Length: 463
Image (tube, rainbow, N blue to C red):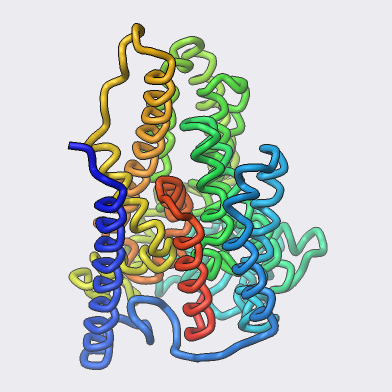
């Protein structure tokens, strides 16, 4: 039986209310655990943040960007030429991310983020001889070794730190340039997702998703954390693979492989993007069959470049990961209770993706459950058109569902207990396109903007 629009909207609202209650429970239970046992190591669970109501120089701009996107975003997304839409989405995302970061001021919001004791810029001086440092990198991961790396350096393969070392070498020194790099590059993730959604589903759905990608609550953590930069690299790997498997040029596969290889050397956990890549191959399987050998060779060759380079330089990825697990349980990761974080992490995901994504995920599930078989070749043109729209929705729903599966695997692993509001930014970007399924986008965009503004003005986030 076909659901009525009213029933769908009611179901959307119920999903959002359930998610809000879920977040509230995570807050209350988390506060109790932290106040009683002090084992969460976050001051405002489930988010790594402090209660700190404030306004800042970015407040007026953030309000202006939010109002403009809510008022004009859906209309412009439909009317703009495709390349113009991509440029507008990136520009809007940049403005939104910068304004939210500057709510905390230049030093607290941008320049000081990557210079705190556990961050990447604190060890740049130890990379004066890059080859020697890479050969010696794994010897400093575990606590108790001579000069152990700070937490974030030990917790990531060396490409993460090396990025900021290279920025320093070309004269872009200090936290301001590092923060600007993360915001500028991180904001391109919305463009990559739009490119992929258009290639794998259709342009109509990509256009509907565009305002939600530009105005995502995730921008609170993209500005300025290195995970925003990681999210963009992973997103472009998927986007280039989508172009390769949908007939835009098989050569894109080499770029996709190269960026995926880099992704794995930016963050160990982002190897799970192989699942999303597999989903792309499934969605483009008809084209893949045309030149499977060439595509596979280009993809594998591209993916081998970064691992081979780092291996020849002396860094062993598998050894690094093994030692990271030891370091993780030596620190707060060994104390933080899995029984709380295995579900509270998902409350963080609600906060970074927003109420619209919750409703979109409900519709994603409904699309997959109730999908219909394609009509026969004898259908009328109008029926065929309806089927094409339905097929595009199913393809997008499949992509979003596989992303959710990858996120759940990361959650169950126990290697992401807390701080997932930044760690899972790469996955969050691929959940946001579910908002394309929603009617009345202005209402949902208002909810997204209000959540981001409240989070940024009531809390001082740690990242």
